[in-house]
Image (cartoon, rainbow, N blue to C red; front, side, top):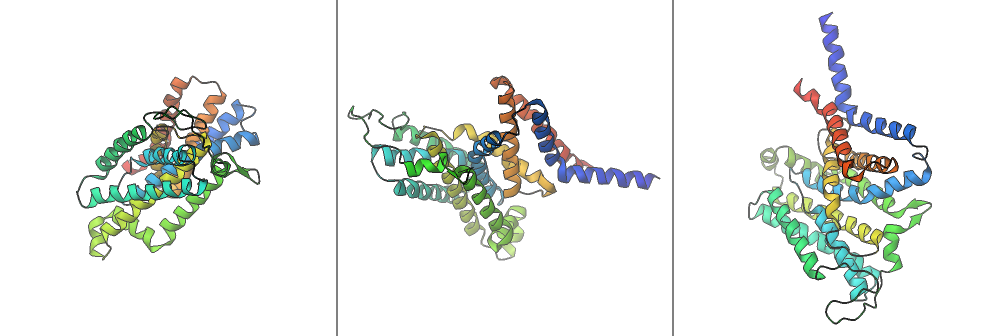
Length: 333
């Protein structure tokens, strides 16, 4: 009899470990669907996915760094910096959308290289390196445009004239357009998440990243070049963060100083929620996507319920605690 009870308890905790976060997501959806008549409206569902696209992209950048047991705190700032560069190219320097897209992506990769250099060669811990980069890029973004946002027909701070360039329609399409009724930011988000999932789970390079994150010494003894793959991880992280910045800038229609900052905490939460999805226990693209979706569902539902904005973080924090408690409590058994 005792053995049966233990087996049942084990099975219960096993189910919670694998599906606890999924249960919370489903519970949140059901709650808002019952409480709000228009929650399952197609336009509202579209808005949820559109709103989580930027958070998800930044979270995916963080997820890549987590695979090697790192932590890229600069991802959101890279996104904001990329949006400022893109806007500057089009509005102030009057260049087309092609360089306004390519250059920020290159800059994102270069920042990832700098992060990797400081971590590998200077032996600065990942968190401290990327935290320092976050402050540095915020300062550079502010100095780059002397503290002002970049938008169509803005007054130029140096000569008192008016900027004659504009945010190009082709660029704005990345954040505001639709393809077959699906918002382009959602298509970009799903595409990047799919590619990240394939890279991490179905290529030897992704497996090497996981090996380094799991046991760096064992990976080194297996002949894996630790420094090489840390560099690759941070380059990819910078690239994905820059993609998120382009979508952010296109959605806003301007280059806002530190525009990525408000997305950091939600992105960090989404990337760590990903660990708990289906009991995977490691950073993964699919889990991160569901984590971002949970954050988006909560925010959307609370706004529709006219919940005070200054109390929304209380609900989000409580739900996250419940979701993660259901998942990780089994580890103490």
